[in-house]
Image 1 (tube, rainbow, N blue to C red):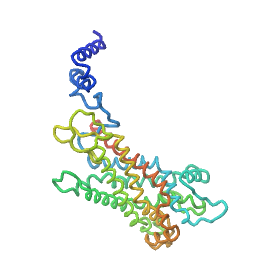
Image 2: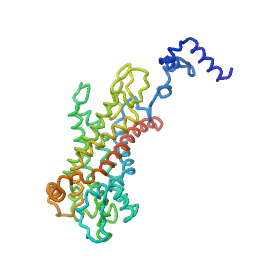
Image 3: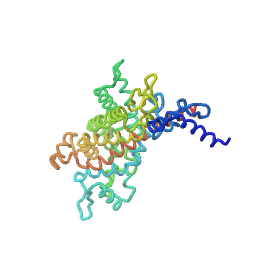
Image 4: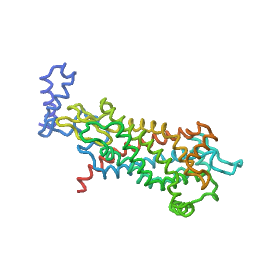
Length: 388
C-alpha cells in the first residue's frame, strides 16, 4: 500500500472511533499524539515537531548558558544593535549639544530640527557617512560595555540572591543592574568619550575637527588632556548607566517574567504543566513539568517596554553626560556646573532635549539587542556540540 493511503487509513480509523463532539473539543490533538511517527507516538516526539507548537525563533536550551556564552553573546548583540541604530544615536547627540557647541554663526550655519530633519540635514551637508561617524569606537564600546553590563547581569544577580531563596527580589535585581552598569562604565569609558566626540564633530568645520581617526583620537586626548581626559564624565556616566540598567535590564527581566507567568506570547505548546519562569536566561524546569517557553515575540515586547522606561528615567543624565564629555577643556568645572549651565540656558525642558531620538534609538536598540542576545545564546549552545 502506498504511504499516503496508509496514513489516510489510519486517520479514518481513528476518526471512526471518535464522536464529532470530541473532534471539536480538542480530541483531535489528543488523537494525533497517539498516531505512530516512525514507530513513536507524538508524546515522545521532540516538542518543536508537535503540530500545536508556537515557538518563534530557536528553542530555549534545557540548561542555562554559562557566563562565557552570555558574555560573548551580549557583546555581539550590542554590536548588531549599534549597526542598526547608530544613525539615531548620532542624531540624538547632535540635538543634545545644539546651542552648546560654539560654531561660527553664519548664514550657512546648520540648525537641526527633529529626528528626520537632523538625519536629512546631516546627509545633505556632510554626506551619508556622517551618520556612522564614530562607529568604530561605538563597536569597541559595545564589545566591552555590553558584554559586562548585560552578559554578567544574571551572574551578579545570582551572586546577590540569598541561598535557598525561591525568587529573586526587586532589590537584588536593582543591585545587580547598578553593579554591572558601574563596572562596565569604568572599563569602557574611553571608547564612549571618543564615540561622542566623533558624533559631535560634524557640527564643526573641517579645520576645527580635532581628530583624523579613532586611534588618533585616543592618542590626542591622552596627550592633550592626560589619561583623565579618556575617563572624562565617568561619574555622570556611571549615574546614567546605573539608572539605565535599572530601567532597562530590570524592566526587561520583570516584563518577561510577567508575560510568561500570564502565558502571553510564549512558545508553550500546551502539552504539560509549567515549571519555573525563565529570567534573562532559561532556568531549570521543575521535575515532571515543562516551563512556558520564551520566544521572540515575548522578547520583542519586553525589550520595547524596557527601552521606553530607560529613556524616561535616564534622559536628563544622558543630556548632561553628552554635553560634559563633548566640552572643551575648562568649559565646565564638573558635571554639576554643566547641569547648572544647562538649566540656566534652556530651563528644565533642556533635560529632555533630544528625547524623541533618544527613545527611537534606545527603544529600537533594546529590541534588536535583546532579541539578538537571546537567539545568539541559543545558537552558541546548539553549536557547541557540533564544534566539540
